[in-house]
Image 1 (cartoon, rainbow, N blue to C red):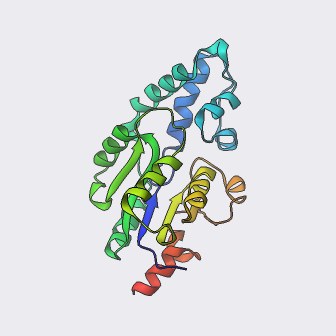
Image 2 (image 1 turned 90 degrees about the horizontal axis):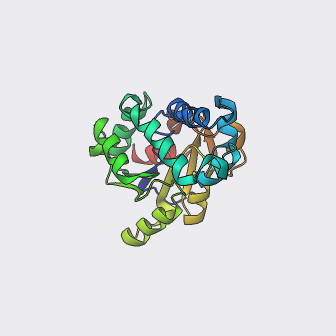
Length: 223
């Protein structure tokens, strides 16, 4: 494989440990609409992009309002507790190691760009990333268009790019842009769903070093 130059990080569920926060926020919206609540297993089996389809799988329909109503209610509930959501315990050490090894790092997220900037600043991670790529709306429709625009603007060779995420959508984005992909089975999709993807699926972020991944290969060449 080509030598890596960049790691493109997903944020929610990958670096940010927000699985339970997302479930709690959605349960508030579900309860207000009289719909069945989520546990981890059900959430991981139905969550996906675009999130408008996910809302449909949860049972939301015209009798409950509009997608705009549900999305705003979810974000309001999520944002109220956002400052208490931790990053993964190993995230800072991994970001430090990869930066020290010469890899350039970027965040690619379906989250609102302003919210993403606030969270990165709150956790004092800004120095690790060249860019923070988020959306300019709150619809979380996906991030393929954001990734394509960044590649076109920067001229980055996708063959030298690794996308690290926690959902099938991350794999789909990596496949469409021609990048390598590693998925972490700690976030918003469970391991069983991720195993359907043709890429490495790891138990934790720390496995980036020990499993057969582009990161391990890069670090071996750099040492």
